[in-house]
Image 1: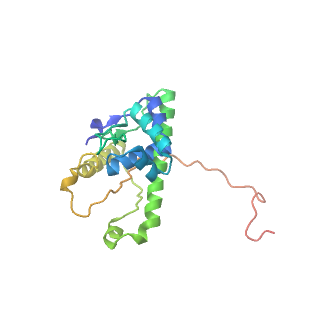
Image 2: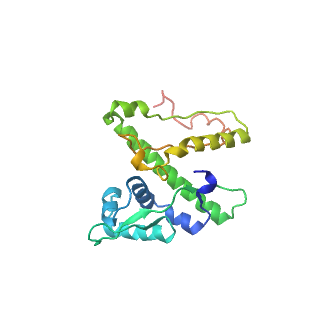
Image 3: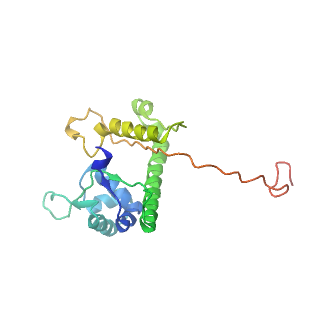
Length: 209
């Protein structure tokens, strides 16, 4: 899926509504495992069914979740993930309220992604050998032009697209396939301005007192 095909988030109210840990976790559950009831979502996210119902209604209000076909006797309302993908990217011309909402949501998404990585690290030794070998936690310093960084983004997007959980036919995935995550951040490093050396005696040294 190209970036243009994803939903571009620009509504500050919708972005602030999504920037909630429980709502991000609910969307993650619906995206990874398919339709669910509020009770099923609550069990995974760790909230009450009534709280889950409220968050699901809020997600539906802004188009992130929607009703799913009923199951069995249809006594419980079913919900599903309704967004094929989202883009939250600061733009030079963003009004202040839009920029603030984008920054809030980006931080929430990054925090949620960091939590997933932390959980994966904590569970690493319990994973089968093949999944341990397939996992990587990687950071690289690049020397690139702005155009090269944009091209790198395009190529990474193109590489990941066939494996997207929103598009891949689950009936055709290899035996043993699981939900995995890719975290991609491409940005120019902000300049680190010198803070200056601390004054002598400001902080106790290793031999002090």
